[in-house]
Image 1 (tube, rainbow over the protein chains, first blue to last red):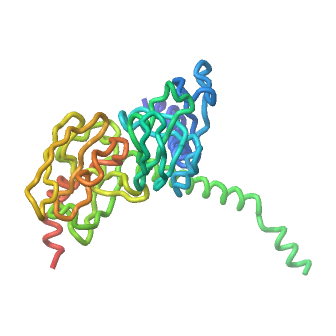
Image 2 (cartoon, helix red, strand yellow; image 1 turned 180 degrees about the vertical axis):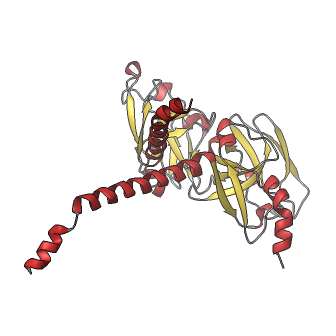
Length: 133
Length: 173
């Protein structure tokens, strides 16, 4: 029993170390996300299930710029990730073509839209998204 | 001069470099372990401000924050949660959850001046948070229901304080 444990222990230690380092790198530097859905066509092709490299260093300074493609947790379901394009930053005024209204983006929020406007479930449905997401 | 060079050559550079590298690797592993525990398991936070009186002190209270249950979705009304402020993503605030998705929340619009109250239904994927001190708290009454994804942890300070109460009474003058 003790010999089996001694044989398995280095492997377990390696796994734990690797996973801890991996989680830290995924949180702080970059990670990979698989794309699903057609809301960003033609930027991301829905048939090919593309993998996207996501950079996480932007979380430290929150210096996003307009027309970045960003990944965020859905405001409707915190377990889902959504990928959309950032259209407007806090304090901007935008006009929604369908509804003919002009809105100002409140402090700490941003306006996101998918490239494929017909099929995209984005800020036109659920309003400005808090930057914390 | 040549004596100095000879002494320089005599120092075991390779083993020093090897040891330094392994120590640096150990430090990096320790940092990664601390980061994972702090972000994903359990963390300590200091909360300040008048919005959660009398549960939390004005000058500062240390709060133990449990991040696992927030990630699993096991946050219930009555819990104190830490969340990223919807108004400024660099700030973390602590508030109490009053309503979950589908709940109908009635709140006083302006408790200092009037008795008017409003009732809202919390939309899907959102929670309604309020500070314990309604006179001095910026919470869902001002910025609306908060998406669940902004919640970073649930505090279990209630249980912690109850068990440590005698120690604090002894220590405080």
